Each structure stands twice: as structure tokens, then as C-alpha cells.
Image (tube, rainbow, N blue to C red; front, side):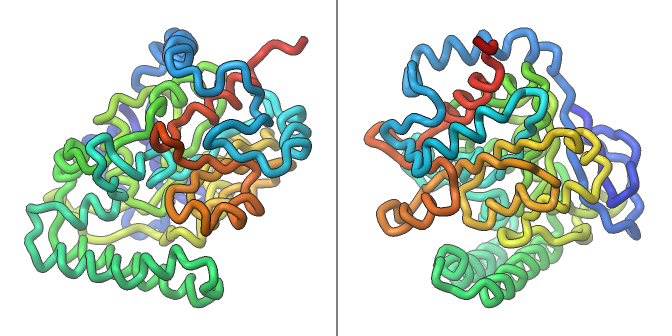
Amino acid sequence: TRCREIACNTALPLHTFRRPLPCDQNTAAVDSLRTMAGAAVGRASGAAAVATRLRDVGRRDGLLPWESSAGVLIPRPDELKAKLDACTVANTHIVADFDYTLTAPRLPSGARGVSSHLLVQGHAAFGEDFRDQSYALFEKYYPIEMDDAVPHDVKTAAMVSWWEGAHALIIKAHVCRHDFEEMVQEPKIGLRPFAAEFFALATEHKLPLHVFSAGLGDVIGAGLTEWGITGDYSVVSNMMEFGADGVVIGFKDPLIHTLVKCGSVLKDSPEYATIADRKSVLLLGDHPGDCRMGEGIDAERVIRVGYLNDKIEERKDFFCEIFDVVLTPTEDGDPGLEYPISVVEHLGAPTP
């Protein structure tokens, strides 16, 4: 696994993810963890693995991406079809949220999955005070985040306070770099079904894939490595600064919370060169703020796929207004990456 650190308008050297080289702490950076390990294997076996597993599940078998099914709501099928007709593997790239989009909101045990922030904040090694203060922040701000009636400016201020408070607690707890590899092995967080196939298929079709998260980039990178995700992708998220002893001493700018995940963050980095000529975006998110990930990158069309994890009936109409596709739980459980895979397969299908 290799990583690329990305600073606004400044390309930093490639370095190893598990043993990063020292970086300039005076540079305001957006780090892009770029994983290349296993790319050749992914290209060779990705399509076959996807086809086999999707045949076994069969949830989208025979359905086109603009056709609704159980747990797949298509509020404007004609509009979606028009967008898809203009998309190809050559002009499209993927932007995906991480927490509760690529990761499962509910685990096979029935327990609620945690976000990358909560995984750190609930880690037993940091003591009760750390956990109590972290969950106090969650209980205070999470209802505000999820309340669609809260004015945008009020919600934004609350999110900044939450993220800054959470990051301050992590710094105070003296978290070490190696702690993240231990954390992601805990059965509190995991990917949705077919995530590995989704990454492999994107690599197979040479679709740039950016994991764009308001979570903790160092945890995300460790998790994707631990869970065996291979292929060619990048992670743009809140990245930590470490001292010589490997202990967290701060966070790099800019602060990325759920309401400022705008695509312009990608445009301000050298990574933008990989997508500058691709004017179509397949966007995956679970939060209204995720819709902005397609803004500011000169996209001509954005296919917005939203995972509606909670308050289904209460939020369904709102999600159908802002997303082109809304994925909801069914009697079989939470959706996996079957629908996004069907879109990528559609883009890669030979033209009749």
C-alpha cells in the first residue's frame, strides 16, 4: 500500500502509508491516501468476482439502473436515464462518502455500526473520561446534524464546534499512529456487502474513485487496508499530524465536516488532474451535505445515489428531492454496493 500526500497546488512525495515520511507541518494540506497495492490483481479478477457474487445475490439481475425495485427508489427515471446515456467509463469518475455509505450502518450482529470518529472516541484504551466527553459531544450535536429543519448556518456552526471538540479530545488523549491498525480490527465497523467488488470493478474500468469523508482519514486508510480493499483509489479526509514519537499532535487544514464536503477541495489539489477531463460524476452519500461533493469540479452531470439509513418514512420524500436514486433497507437488511455496481457495469457495457 502506498499513499500520496496532497497539498493545495503542491504535490508532496509518495510515501508508505504504514510508515509515512515526515511532512511539512506548516503546509495547509489535504492528504490523498492513494492505494496501489494489488491493482494488477484487481484488474485481472475484479470483473469475474463481481459477476459471480452478483449472480448469487441477484438483487439487480435483469434491471436497468433507472428501474426501481425493492429498496431502490428512482424518483425521476427519465432524467436519470438521460444522465446515464451521457455517461461512459471514459468521461466519468466516482466520489464516495465513507461513514455509513461505504460502511455498514448496522452490523451482522445487529449492533449499530460506528463512524471513523466514533471508533476512535469509543476505544477502551483512552479511558472513561475520554469516552464520556466524546459521547457527550455526539449526543449534543448528532440530533442537530440529522434535523433537516435546522437552518444551514446554525447547523454549520454546530458541526464546526463538534468536529473541533472531537479533534481536541483526540489530541489530548495522545493517540498513536499504530492504534488505528488495532481499532479497525474491532467488530464495531465494517464495509457494506460488495464493497470489495465495487472497488475492483472501478479499477477494472479505470474509473477514478475518490473516498471523500468528513471522518478521520488515517482511520479510513488503515481500515481499507485491513479489510483487503485493493485497486486504485484515493482518500480525501481529515488528516492528523504526528510527532516524532508517532503521537497525534494536531490536525491538518482544512477542516472537513459534513456540510463543507464540496468538490472544490478536490479541484484545489493535484489529484484533480486525474478527473479534470471527466465531466460526469457518480456520487455516493448518505447525508444531504454529501450532494455538494459534486459541486465545484466543473461537472456537467452528477448522478447522486443516496443511502437512507434511518427515519426512512420521515426523510424519504426529502431524499428523493435531492438524490437521483435513494437506497433504503428492505426485509433482507441494509443495501450493499449492488446498485452502484450495476451503474458501473452499465457504463462499461458494449454499445449495441
